[in-house]
Amino acid sequence: MAEQEPQPDDRPRPKYGELAPPGWVWHPPADADRLDTSRPAPHDEPSEAPAGALPRFGESQPGGAPHPGPAGHPAPGGQSSPTARPVPTWNVTLTVMLAVFGFFGMLYSIAALQAIPASMQLLHTTNDLGDYTPAPIVGTLILIGSIILGAVWAASAVIAAWLLMKRRLAFWVPLVAGIVAMTVLLIFSGAVLATDPALLSFYSGVTPPATTPTTPTTPPTPTTPPTPTIPPTPASTPTP
Image 1 (cartoon, rainbow, N blue to C red):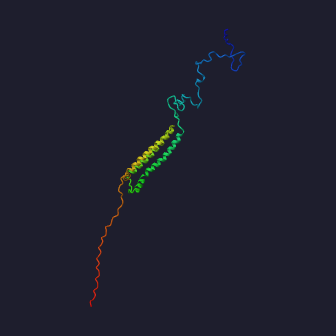
Image 2 (image 1 turned 90 degrees about the vertical axis):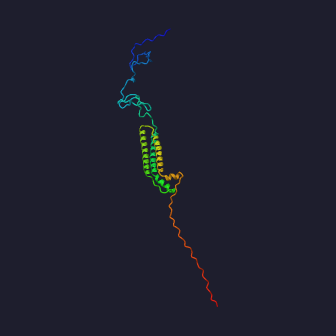
Image 3 (image 1 turned 45 degrees about the vertical axis):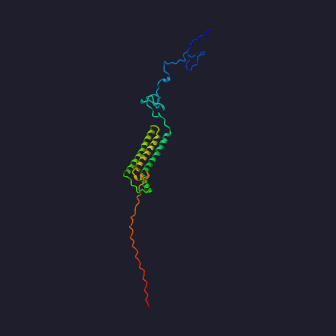
């Protein structure tokens, strides 16, 4: 016995909020699972965003610039967003600590460079090398070295601050500046020591003769020979 096809229900469908007539049963249409692409979906229709709302990813802002994507992803226009590279939280703390440590290290290096002539005088006195007379170029070398040490720290502080503003790693800048400052200190200290040949000769094993003052010697006084003594003659006795 063949199944009878359901007869279409010609009765009007109830409207929203009305009761269905007795015996009315709703049957889904045969193409209910088919995707209807003839008309756009309600959520695809453009809608005006409220004032102050951020545009979606890929949409243009009111000024015409594309909205940057999330952190770590570039914007659709090919421009990278400012927060594209996450920065660890310890970067700022470590950079500031190293910069402060480098500042005090710079002051100590300048003081040590300016104290080299006094140290060389102490070495001369200790090793009996006489008085130390600085060469005319010593003051110029110390001044140039001090200026370079201060400039190295100032440049490192500016570069580190710029990298922190760009949200990039900056802790390595004070470390590199410290290595450069130490190299500058060694170079200028060696240049100042090289101006003293007496000290270089002493520490290289060739000791110069000691300059000790000599006292003038007095000529010996001539000695007079002793005068000979004449023995007394015996007294003559009278004869009877």
